[in-house]
Length: 189
Image 1: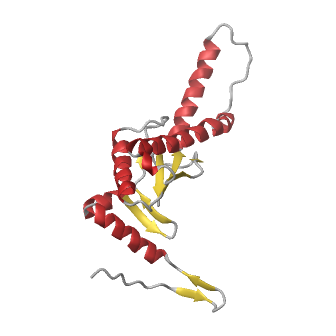
Image 2 (image 1 turned 90 degrees about the vertical axis):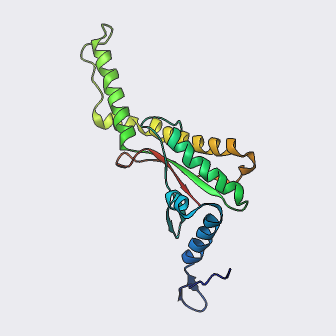
Image 3 (image 1 turned 60 degrees about the vertical axis):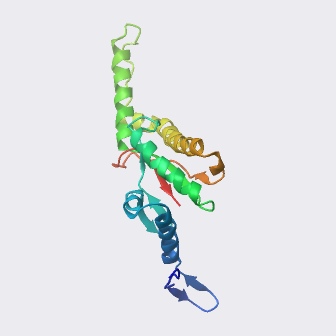
């Protein structure tokens, strides 16, 4: 039986109805994934399905880098196969920088300041940057790192199959110094 039974909650008025299509989207995504991958593979790839679309397991990055490691390449390769098998499917990739990236950046700046103080050419009495100034200065490099992660995933996916061009979009990359999760790129349908 290839029928899909849907319950679509409707609220609002007759002239302005409010439809919740999240169940339909979830069933369509689950059906598409089930026809390609075994259930255990789908469970490992798909993190959640919500009104915003299906969210896959994030693609991990090492702190301070925008280079895909073996784990990241494995997840991205599965996504490339999914896209290749479903020509109408599109993905959004969103690079993220997190607290770990910021801590590494802060340590690097503090090390540079120590080295400058030790140099004979350092001016006596020159003020070191405060932690707040370091965090403020991190916005541009951390934003760039998040964007570089987005683009690294996109490049990898396109290297797997050039036909995916136009089906992988980039969202606004995010620098969040309070995010305690590992550095990553989030992927949604």
